[in-house]
Length: 452
Image (cartoon, rainbow, N blue to C red; front, side):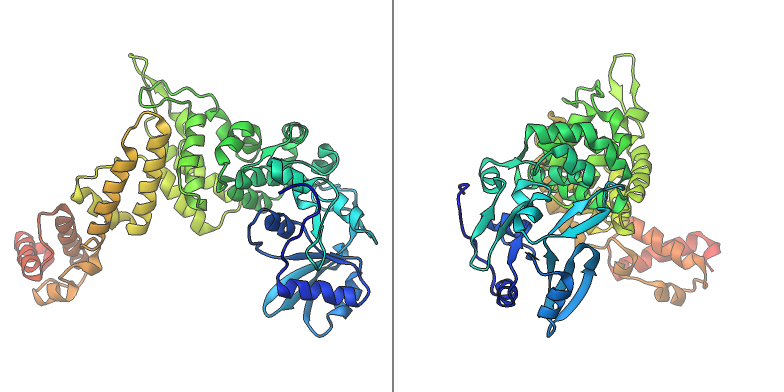
């Protein structure tokens, strides 16, 4: 789309809010990401509105609606229509950012231009009136057309105001496949250390969004210094030569390619970012000058758990990603149902599916493992066939009551026999058939008086 005046389509409900403010004598515009995404041809996740009405005036204008003064100090009122929240914020300018996050003071404005001038990037500094006419004072549409992330005004000032904007720039670049404009990039490299003062919860959200972007590889390549501010444990990986014919790239380049090769979900992309973080600490070089990383997955798993806790990831995500890192070294033995049954029994089918994706991305990222995708596909088909078989105790065709009727006494011996039978089924040495399992159980009982 060109840089001239254009129009976007504003949904009826959001438009009704703009029109009501207009009817009350206030200026009102859709603003920010909803305008950006509409210009790009994407459906916005939400519609934010800015106005010259002050918070109390906005609340009065929507007295018949449910409203929440979510950020009255900063001029924001949330209006809820049919269960959908709309943030309506007074035009404002901000003063001082002593904590590199929140403005120390806010002044309400009468002009849209002053409000747009305080925003982070040109692609987010556009507005649209109730008829969808776009107001673009800083070249946002042209930057969208060119595929550029550029700060509004002086990049150093924008990032000093709120350090998280640096990580937001990278998230947008990864999400949209945009390039960061040189002056903005230089400021990020110069000021990225300020991210250490940002709350981990804010960093976590932006990091996950960055990792799941379509252009994540290019961002990680150009901004490894920023990522290492968030996760200093990755620093030794950069430029770390692997000295192994199975790997074409150093640890960091391999990591970047593995992230790109994984499906764009938070657990998988996090796992690939951290899967080889234990390699530098486990490196050894043999007499033939071949590098080895014995135990790196276990070391990496322990590091991963600490990192994700520090970044305040929820327990479920931290536990799953840690498991994927710790167990990522298994081989894709696509022709061994026995091995697959044991994997499913140990981890569950859903987790094994994720492990297979980890192995696929890891193999592709070596630059030497041909046929990895094909091997993964074969293993996935095997997984589906095995998932329907007996892989856990509840699926056994025999249970504890059967053993009691056979004379086994109450106590841990019941579980011992059942687990032994399950192991035999997983090995393929015993069929999961009630009659077969009864015979096998009888043999176990007869061999040991301890079961009576």
